[in-house]
Image (cartoon, rainbow, N blue to C red; front, side):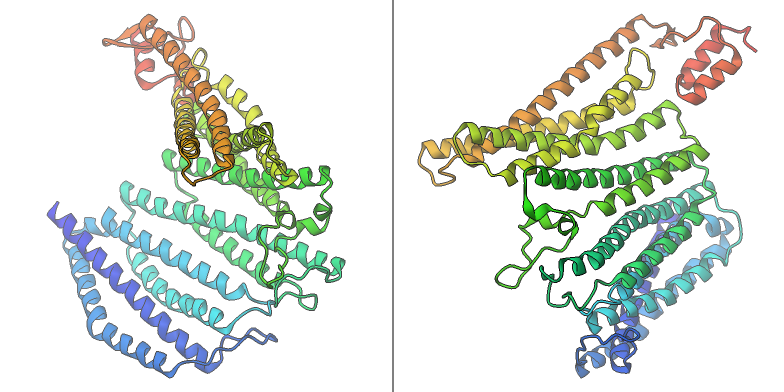
Length: 545
């Protein structure tokens, strides 16, 4: 135990020294880049910032401090760690060393990817500033130097990893892969939106200005967006290859669930934006006419600033539908090539992840709709834009109305022995619904009492009516799911009372009278039986072979 704590201490000091040295190298490289003029894009003039001579002096001072203090301390602890590896060969493939290396490899890999993406993102954009290019480029160079040292240390040991070490390595790689999946979704969205604006701006013949550096004479930076996407994709492929041979069932299930969640959230965003676009068109909003409504950058107001309140010029829904579909297709392809572990439980957990974002959006829309309805009943004027804002969330959450019955049938405790995903989903729904209902009710009552007592909070009472709308919508959802929770608990209790006893604990009745060995194993793998239930069946039927 003490030896493990000592090695953890070594790893923390070494990691801190490497991170500090990377920062020092990045700062110094940044100053050299500015002075050598190495950060101009080919054929593109950047806004130049005159370097401050004092900054270079400070960078060199930091480097001296790093070489005199930080580097020797880091090297000393690295030597002590290597000495432990010589004395105890188990340390070479143990979890402490692997957690240390995997964390830094994943962290520096992400740092380099994001730095390179930031470096190329300004290509083709007249707004690019030299300082904004020099900083991420310097970080990327310093990160690559540190990553090379980490890779050399990682590959210096060829022995097979312990099971715990392999799992730790895969966890950090999966986390990086999930982060880059989100980055890919955003990059795909940006590339599609940038391309749309490059096509639509000439169509509008400069009727709308999009900032001082993106006028009709300058198209958006498509090359930069494309290169950013390629860098993110290459990084994702690298981490995918790192985890390709991972066989851990829990990590595989977590990967599938998170990919499903990313695609579900992305598709929810698409439906919300698309619904707003459709409702604006149906309500006769002339500003929503295609193609101007597909532009993601809001126009300038009278002060020359971007007016983000003009939502009808911000419908970037083409990118999310494509990006979400790509991630969902990849997740389904992975499930087809390698079925989810835990059988029914795995499928239901993925379905929970797909359903939950749509449910949240639906009840946001329902709360907004009821709030606007209460305002209308009170004689307050409600604009068409406000109604469309409620409709867009209601329509964006419509898939929940279809997905929840499917999930409810598959996880019905009358017919399924797998209840955990359903219980998790219902409990989350109850907690969210009750929390929102109680908080909004408290806010509504406070505003109402304040008006009665002539306390200046909201003399119109509109905020209270909106809060009560939230209470009605979320309270109704909470009551419904509480009823589902109580019904499920009653069914499970009845099954517990009437089922055969296994060592004093209740066990569900077998799905068939005399199971074959193949059937028992199939049900066990598919999630229809637990290990205890399968053992009980085999003890009750010794003739099964």
